[in-house]
Length: 393
Image 1: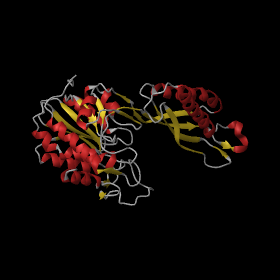
Image 2: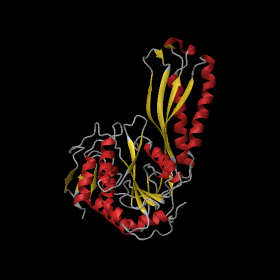
Image 3: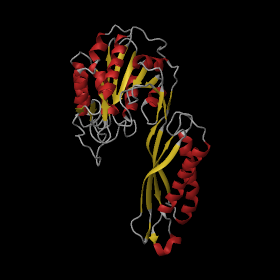
Image 4: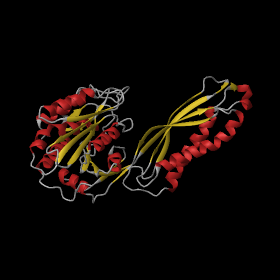
């Protein structure tokens, strides 16, 4: 059964509006103050205008290497969704099982609240390692905050042993996910009256040719790429998500833009995918510039979230299995900060309460049973007396 303290802290976090477009400082300051009451000092690293912050705190002997418990503080919005309960209400209902409803309950304030509720146990633990609490901003819009957090740790000389990211995996350790690489392409053509098309460069048509390249690549992945079983879609994907262009039917459009993404398998190379798109754009530009020197394509990176691939034999994976009581591992379809932590040299696994099937949905929820399983996970971590196979690099 979930403790009242853990439930209270999770509910407190859920009632804070930390949609990515907003500041997360209310939540960060709440966690900072909760830890300060226990005598724990938090490190805050901010975004450019200091409207958002990451938090890093060490629970236990600061001289000992530690295990990171990591979570992101931002949530997706609920605009236009058909909620039957207040998104910030943090309501518990018992149908068909006890569930806690609210934006971020599954993704991923449940994990953060349960971890925070065990701060005192981690402080008083006789374990030969520390527990680090790491909270980031802007994960949902590109995993931006965690890069600043890791840079801050490196600058401070902090070298954690491993990282457990509490994204919703139904408390089954996840050892792989695809990457997410998202780009904006802006097309500049040359406008003209639509009766004089040879004197123009149609930005929409040029964009459409490049969009066709994205679609061709997607079909190629499905047709030719070696399968990576265990994913819902066992090959890389490519798709266009937004498009805009033109001002009137009788004006050849000068400008157009579109967003597209690659979700690459851990065994694929998303950067080569993007290089293929850019190469096609440069080929198209040759004809465009014969009509108008200023015509062409420009690319902007929206986000680059690397894929994640670990192993069932990794010590941190075995640790997560021991703590969760799960003998198996899984793979997840969604992106996380795991690839970024791993690229920084920190062994990582993903394991947290709730299901991604409930995340980002109307009436998002996490079951109290899942939170109770997460609580047992934390209790086992606080009670550990050794870490088999995990050593500081």
